[in-house]
Structures are given as structure tokens and as C-alpha cells.
Image (cartoon, rainbow, N blue to C red; front, top):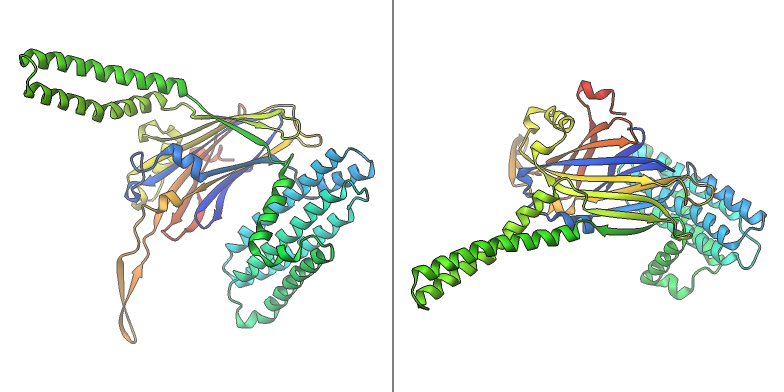
Length: 467
């Protein structure tokens, strides 16, 4: 799909990202087909707990290139606008630069071939050095504005150095035939890291005590990161839906159970004359069953009533003006196979025969309506990134126990085969009044992490609407 991407983020997480313009509306649905052999279902995974602990979203202003906020920040400084405007555009550039650096680092870390890794690392190092130089040319001369520039400059310098050092540390082994070229790239990137460290020292950005303690420097940079996010990352106000309805269901379930219990008590009093030990034991059993079945009946009723309804609403506000920029509704629940949309069922049925296993279906949906006003001046697009941690899934997986035997020159050897699982993810995207577009991804993973995330083909009748 042109407007949306689903890809691996970390060792055990995947994410989707897309952009939304002013006055846009869209609906995105993800259907996770979890093989029953993984042991994940409504009984073992609480949707609400998973939503709050493993689904992380980030929504901020977006521009097509890193140069745009930089040009605007320079324009603001030259035209002597307000300090607040300067801070906003400065933060926009710093935030987008930091996010771009993180995304490039994650993509590079997934490359295991040195022939691909080191040329890409060299390009990244050159880009970082060039962008930092351009950024520093726009340093303001007004003493009131300098502290905000220095905060962003300090963080970006340290952040870039950390990401580059991380890449060098986790670089694939250098082959003998390419040792000279890869070594040159490595030395150039290390030289850039040393240059940035000396630059921060020359500007006296961090005290000796802070630099010598990794805890202090990490926490200081975390605070600087929060400063540059002000005015860029939208403030989120999440509200659970159906609270009153859930209370009503609880009262209705309790009333139904008490109706049955009262009938049983009246029946028991008719059987036993007077207050006897047998009557007391019967009443104890009746009340015991009431406590057992009350929760089950309430949960069953709630699942039926809640099915298909959004579970949360979210307001996105501009942190500067406090204006509402967008509204969202969020769904997260396990759905039955018969409740899947026909197109999703058709897509899943086209899997290879050996992969057509019984599955539980976890549905995540998000509907967004963007306002046509309230945006920061100069911006008319939002970027949304949502990551899904698969750690709660992995805890149920089995380790490899199967032995694979083969004959070698030394004799017969046995190797333990890792147990792999496949999760199919069907993505459905509707933009405005346009028809839905589809995509299917296969996520292969084991207990250690994600092996691969690959996009798969769709049935012919859906190719025209797959985007």
C-alpha cells in the first residue's frame, strides 16, 4: 500500500505507520491469525491489558523532508518572530531528525550482510555530519533564544553518536576480501563520533560528573528529548467507552443470578421443614454456585454486547494551542472466524495447505477523523506510528525440542531444531469514501525473536483494490 507500511521494528515488535492530512478520515483494521498451537486466546490474553502494555502509538506533525523545519526555523530567526514560534520550529526539526535517525538505525541493524551494511553505514554517517553542520549554521544570536538551540544541539549530537556507536558494535563480521573498504567506513564513522564528543566538550554542554556517569547522562538526555517533543508530539486523551453499559450488564447479570437463587431458596424451604442442617448446607451450596456463575454470566453477556463496538476514544490535541486536531476510536478484541469480513476470510484461505491451521483471530481497529483546523502554522499533515509488542505472545511458545540427525564424515550428529510459528496479519485500509484496500503479511517468529516479516500475494479479485 502506498499510504501505509507494516514492518518489523525491534526483535519482538512490528509497527505500522501512515500519514493523515487535514480534514482526512480513515479506518484501519488489522486481523492477527494466531495458530491455536501458540496457546493464545481470550482465556490466556486479556485484550485490555495487552492494549495498555504492548501497543504503543506516537502521533506528531509530519513533513516530507528534514530540510523543511530547518528552513522554517532559520526564517523565524531572521524575521525576529516570537521566541515561542522559534522553539516550535526548532523542536519540529530536532524531533524529526531524531526519529529519522532511529528508523535508519533499526533498518541497518536488520542487515546481516557486511557487503550491504557498511556502504549504508558510510552513507548514514555522511548524511548525519552534513545535516548537523547545516543545523548549526542557524544558531541564533539572541541570548534569550540560545538555550533552546543548545538543548536541541546537545541532544542531537549525543543521540547521533549513540546510534552510530550502536551500529558499529552490532555490525556483521567483516569478510577478508572487503576488510579495507569496511575498515575505512568504520574508521570514518568512529571519527565522526569522536568529533561530536569533542564538540560537546568545547561547548561545555555537560559537566564532567554527568559525562562520567552513564545513568546521569542518560537521564539528562531523556529530559532534553522531552523538551524537544513539546509542541510536536500531540497530547493524547484516552477514554474507555461503554463504562455505563458495563455497569448495567453487571447489574443485569447479578439480577438474573439472584432470580434463580431466590427461586432455589424458596424451593429448598418447601422441601425442608424448619431450619435444619440440611437446609443450611443446601443454602450454602446455592450461594456458592451463585458466586461461581455470576462472573461467568456477566463476562459472557458483556462479550456479546461489546462485540463490534469500539472500546476506547482518543482526542489528539496540539500541546501549544490546546486545540483538538483529531479524534479516534479504537477496537481491540478476539473475533470468531464467522465474524471476519468475507474479503479477509478469502485472503486467509489462499494460504498454503500446510499453513491452514485452526487459529484465534485478534482484531485491532482504529478510526481517525482529522479536523481541518487547529494545525500548527505551516503543517497540514500528521504522522501516526503504532507498534505491537509480540512479547506477550512469545511467553506461550515452546522451545525447540526436536532433534535432527544427519551423517557427517565424523559420524552421526544431532542438532536441535528451533520451533517456529507463523502469524498471518491481514491489513484493511479505508480512506474517506474510497473502497477498502488489502494487504497480507506473514510474521515468522520463535521464542528468541522475529525471523522475518514478508508481504504475501492477494487473491486476483482483490489485487485491484490492494493499493
